[in-house]
Image (cartoon, rainbow, N blue to C red; front, top):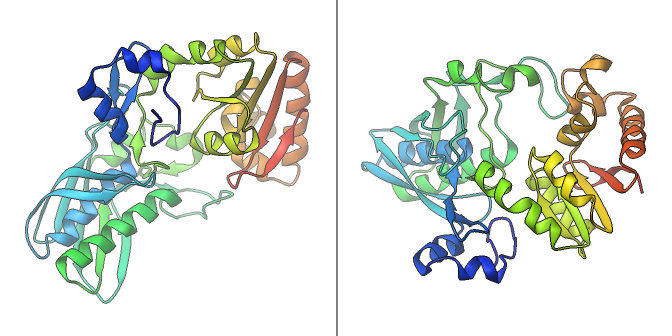
Length: 334
């Protein structure tokens, strides 16, 4: 049985420990199976929650809404609880079995009015970039590409449901400015609120799932790729098709401790978490606030290669591969 979100093939021993009802949740993608047979529930990202609020707002121009059918970026359709009446839609972020999610329960609101086309603007509580970054110009809202596409799909679906040519939508997060200050946003140049993001549409139950399975998975293979996020997971499978690819998130130290025993070990992913793991001050020591800004600078690739050489000297058994967001390899210690 394969996880429809991550593509991970669950071991038979895990499946045998799980009851039939819980396995159905895993097959649907809304649950994650762990080595003990326990199933942890996935939650919804801020992008999916915002999409639910947008659908509710637009669809309620026709009739009241209590559930928003949202097509997540991973291709799974989710019925997300929401409320919508007279062009005002709301949804609260459900984080599943991820108790550390600081944005859990936050309310996202959308207002909509009929229009000739579809447009989505942002207001209170949604962060904006205070400076130009490699991907976003100064002043632009902190909405990830996948999340914005998800939001537009929800608006289009709602327009079809309501029989509208289009709608003008404004997104707000009433408590977003306060919560945003508690996140990493100020450190990466996002001020005034939280970010609307999500590459799959789901919030992963990271803490329990990873600590329970990461070492066991690595221990069962001689060829492993440790990666740090969804983009790394996708491209690592393409770059290393004969390897066991393990999503470690921020738990790189635990993963590498287990991987050291493998005959062939690789760490592959975007530069942020990987370079900061090997040198926490990699960006700030060079006058940059983020690793992304460092790597995109004039001497960024040279600085990255310097750090890779230093890391390779400390971890001679480990191959370190850095990719960009399109999957192109921009650094490799092979």
